[in-house]
Image (cartoon, rainbow, N blue to C red; front, side, top):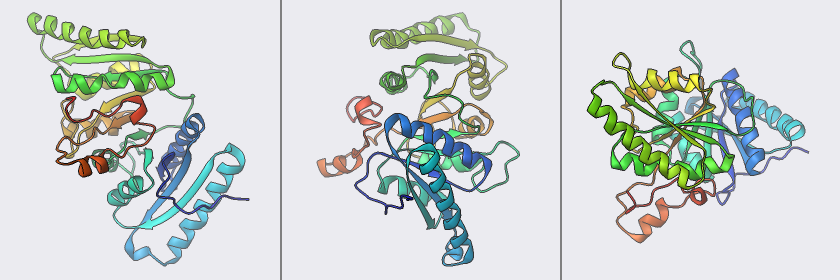
Length: 309
């Protein structure tokens, strides 16, 4: 019998998957299923329609398709599934639902440059930068269990390094090797020596936590961050690129917004964006609300609490 449980706002073992019934949407479901099995989480399949489609045959058709998909996943993949059709703005609806079900993270598929479907191009960027939970962006079918080879790009500000080092505990979830990546567009020897020393300080922190780690500094005046990062990640067969995101519609300390869009648009490697807790907490009540996080994030130290930056 198919599981059609109503959304429980107390749920905290959830993975939200926006579904638009395209191939990349299927890929996102595939990744989400694999992760759901690892963490024993429930999948929430969400299809967003416009307000004009509410109560129409399109809403009914979407509901029927979600029922079919859910039934197959429950029967064949042995995972718990809840499906939902909601009307409204795509970005707001996805993020509002993620907060409502206290999702561990959002897994969404994105089309490549030729994509013209519903979730395409700037959609993942806007979702990732507005979300209060990590967002995993994928383009291809899942072909491995978990993640074993994670690229962590860092710049060299104190703020960025302190946040990036929280990735140590995330890597332990999967027993993954971490590849710390730095980039310079200058061949100035003094700058290179300085950056290498700073990268080593990051590497030392990983090693102290017994996390397998390598460090690479790419110096290429002819490249920009996105191209250098994606080229490096491909050369080492990375299966995940992890970025620490910041509220306000940009990736703080690492990439400008246009860089982020280029990375999400051009990367065939899954990208995980992690959103730190806002730092302007003014009261215990506000802190309690903002620090209401899921077991996927907090036990593994992915969030930097105010005062630790």
